[in-house]
Length: 81
Image (cartoon, rainbow, N blue to C red; front, side, top):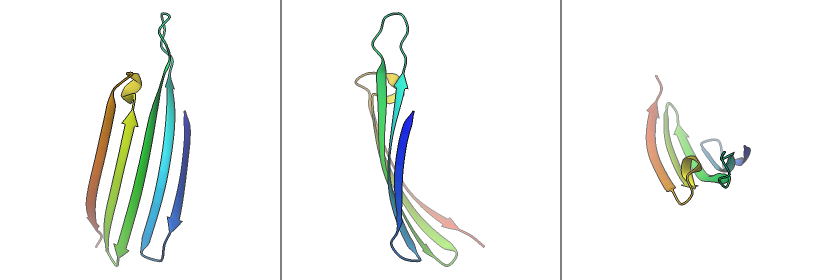
């Protein structure tokens, strides 16, 4: 597994980050190894006890299966009290 990420605090309330990850699946029995690649972007905005968070990611060769792609998007609201 190789993974890299970078995050940046825009101000006291907002942060953004990007990440990438490569996972090598070792196929036995003479099959070709497959590398799954996942790229993601994240953002968060906090006001007092409330945080709004966003994440979006794309995976190619998902779960070590060649030609299988997947996407995920999520928006969440977190309240702390």
